[in-house]
Image 1 (cartoon, rainbow, N blue to C red):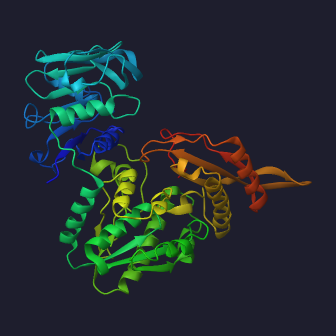
Image 2 (image 1 turned 30 degrees about the vertical axis):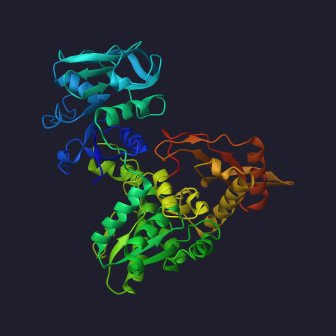
Image 3 (image 1 turned 135 degrees about the vertical axis):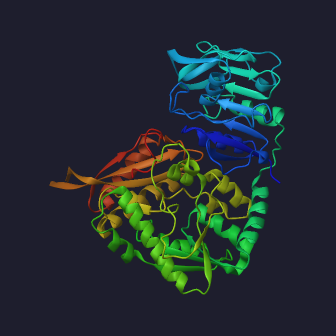
Length: 510
């Protein structure tokens, strides 16, 4: 049985980053809303309370009952979690007189404190709160301070209960991972046994029990997620897995043919279905981003329903849904985090389609999926492919979609992606793509005035897609790529480069 850590979500956009960092320690963790009834405390070795956009002083602030865990299990409160414990167990929290946001440095660390073992004074941490702990409860001892925040870290005496007002999960906290390791491994005694190999073993075993002799149909996209999901399922149920690759008309240039070739020799039963006309017809006239996603999702399901009816006794639809999809779409299992956008592969099935859903990767981050793929022996080149959105170019064409716009963006995208590979930049970028804007701009080609489309190039670096920074591509590369696009793609006369980071921008434009 895998030892687990429970993360209670109070609505912070950093909650998923806590999970990401815990996973880096080879420790499995799960996120649940603070008020969820869907977990059993006895199944966990330690608990972490997340931050929150709420103030603990507000009437509508989350108010969890910690009586079953405080003093009985190791407990770490982060930011709001720390302030909640101080506020409710005899201390005082007030609005901060100084802005406590951004980088800070530890000015005091208690000597011989296991929680801070290996962390020295001066270590950089990241603050993000408007309240501050003015007074600690009487049974607490101060174990860490910054220049502006006296009660930056505390411990409740005779308990393994800790609170910190900074965020160890963000990369700006230089020793954040060490602090989490100290709490989880040295204080809580959680075994570091969650590895790609162990995930494969436990997931295959779970799938065998879940699916039995049932038949499963899976939509392959050619990407990392669906491929790893397919190989996992194949290990579990063999020939009972039926893979279908649907051409939705919104793929990259020549991708339909290339993906089908890619799967030859992998031992997967794959059928290619060209439904591009059906998708484009359904999208005709739709320019709303969410509307387009829902149409693409609906037609995708309809195509699958048609194909599934050609197979006898199929009971399951498999999907390559991963954790960031779930987090952004359904607010961390229905919790208080803000919903950003919907994903076509986590919206559920319509009533007329009587297939159950199986999602073997839904608890993994993208880089974890790649490591699992390596453990399964999947080709490194395939695992190194950039993420590509399920709705494809449908959400990279801003506004309504036509066959001519798809053709135009496919050509632009091919020039950009192939250029990155030729310049040995592809593997230095986490995700890249092009967007077609719904505006025309004036240009001059030869002696003629043009009034044609503008396209945006975007390349970002990230580890899991939850946060991302734009990549500083060489000017010479951008210049060459721009010239190739304008000279080679009919209908485009302007190329711009997106230098926005996530947050506040998302990676995709829609």
